[in-house]
Image (tube, rainbow, N blue to C red; front, top):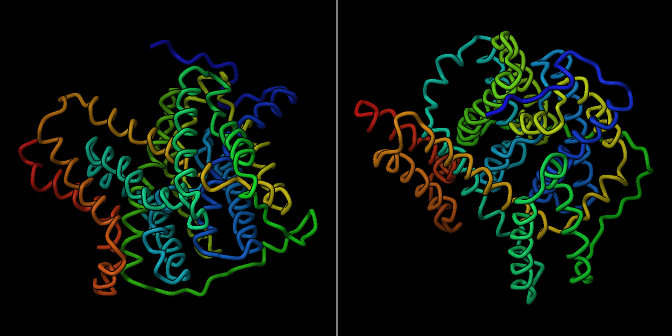
Length: 431
């Protein structure tokens, strides 16, 4: 494989014009995920559009601050920060619990991640995460989000048009995959953004009666969201344990993202960068929990962007962080972004989750010892259990003991525990 050709190194500063253009490209890559995940969680929690807008404003703000501090003090790498999909899995699974219990658990998970990072315990924990375990985690995130994706593609308000919404979602997904097959560079990196725009326009042309835009009486610049929603701490043991498992997966995601960029740039001082980066991720997840919003993680797509642009300068992401902060103070911008139909968001989720499944399969098939029948068993049982638990009817879940419901009723948590048992206890000695 040819080495990545770097025009601007990690500590090099592009010219002002190039800096702004590169910053806008990074922003275009970050916005879709923030909007998609932020809107999905906001709708899960709140029925009023004003509350949903405030929620997304807070997500924009804290990710902007997190990005800037990571660039200037944390891992100091050109890494995208965004809302953690794995925490979305936990939030969706714990939707029957109080909001305060969910975000208390996220805050506790953030503190635990910070302590483990500072203490250097990841050298011990990472031994648990072999290729099959990480592959199962990647694939299970997609599978356990399936019920939520179904609700997005076939919203309850669609009525008799439900089948048309499903047909549109399927057609839309195939179109996105077809386009992704032929585009490269900047267009491939920003494909999700263009898909959101095109999908929204086409959907509203075919379903004009479904066009709804949230309204807000707020001024164009508003900072009231900074004072909103400090949660009341509520300690529910089952929910806390469930999110601690989610944070275990989140930490591996963060670790992999940081190392992937370090490998591309051939950096030698990765130990300090990993400790600072993971510690800062823990702190901001703690703050996000206290503020009542979903936590964040470093995304692993940065190496592809670096390869396509030739720019590895961490300073190129600073304009993106500043613009994220500016957008958080503009409710009309958040309102406009909130007009994306849920069917389009559901289709984008299918595209993203399929990419994640492909990454998981590639990881387990590319192992040095090769793929064996036992690998299939280690992967198969956790995936089956996660699917079964994710689709259990509510009347069955309600029969579980209250303290165990957030654990046994969470398909992702059950799957993670199953794959660790299969990999390290049942087949550990044999393999």
